[in-house]
Amino acid sequence: MPGIALLVFREVLEAALIITIVCAATRGVPRRGLFVGGGLILGVLGAMLVALFAGALANAFSGVGQEVFNAGVLLAAVFMISWHVLWMSSHGRAMAAEMQALGGAVQSGSSSLMMLLLVVALAVLREGSEVVLFLYGMVAGGAVGVLGGLALGVIAGSAVGFALYYGLLRIPLRHFFSATNAMLMLLAAGLAASAARYLVQANLLPALTDPLWDSSWLLSNGSLAGQTLHILIGYDARPSGIMLVFYTVTLLILLGGMRWVSRAADPRAGPAAAAIAAQPQS
Image 1 (spheres, rainbow, N blue to C red):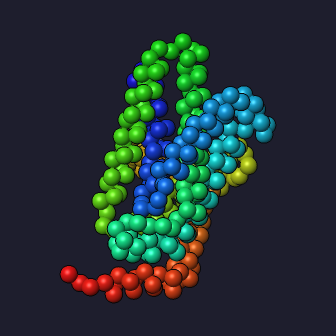
Image 2 (image 1 turned 180 degrees about the vertical axis):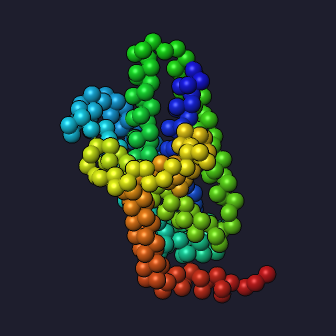
């Protein structure tokens, strides 16, 4: 049971941290919980569907179907998160002003919520499919304590996600959107690098140099700290050159896009800021 609990914990933790950061970044947006719940349900259903067709998926694309599938899910998540980062760059300042002036009654963000639903669904789909396939193999092999390990892993992974979420909410509002946008950028870059690793494994991309460096002596990929940093900032103890290219290009695109969007959004932030400035001081 401990081995099952540890594996489930790792997979749930990865999905939980992704969902946590994105949820924190949509703080104050109405009906967010509905979209998060919808994403969770879609992700679980998708994971079950993947498990049902696991054999066909593994044999697809000349036997590298699982790698191609994982890379596709990761790149889709990168796109969704990147869209959200750019959306927040243009609306975050106005949302912060409205939350301060109206006590959190923010009425914008419905378009971003659809992206939230998709990011949650993709995170649960990828990690959930791996959990389902692993547990299926364990049950077929006669393993015992599967349900207990599953429950323990889910509870522990979810608890860490909730702890991070409530920690993020303690960030002062004036710094909140900048902090969560920075975390989302690093998250997207890390997911892009992971997608590159899967594409190298599928022989669809050259590794360039593999490994580019080896920091396993300092922090291994298998350690809890290494896994957490891998999720949050894309840490890899033995990255290939193409992974670094994907990571860097994603960061540069997002940084450039944020600067461009922020400049274009400045005039729209004026009315909300002016309304606060015009309020009588107590």
